[in-house]
Image (cartoon, rainbow, N blue to C red; front, side, top):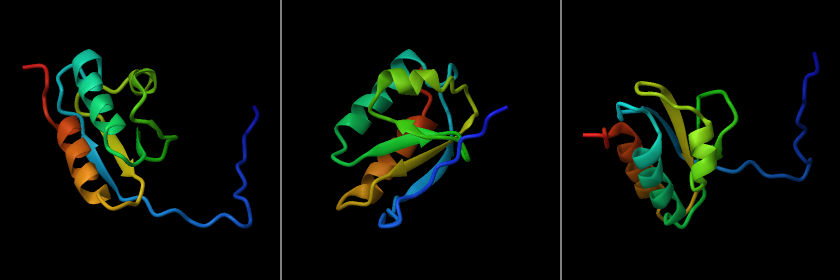
Length: 105
């Protein structure tokens, strides 16, 4: 069994990324329509947005294939992180709202 270890560059500065954990509201999870709504919002946010299961590697929320590959189901907890920026708090709130909403009704 192999383990991968990541080492931070000694000159790298810690990047502040506001984040929040949210439960997925769509009955079918983040598939098809809900995923495309999320990806469109993330792509137009103007700052980097990542999503993933808490404690696991996050993916680019602006990539439909990456979001679909997570296999997120209804009720799953997802951590949303937004790169620190001028509008990061409003972007975070928007993305969290999209994930928490049932877009399948």
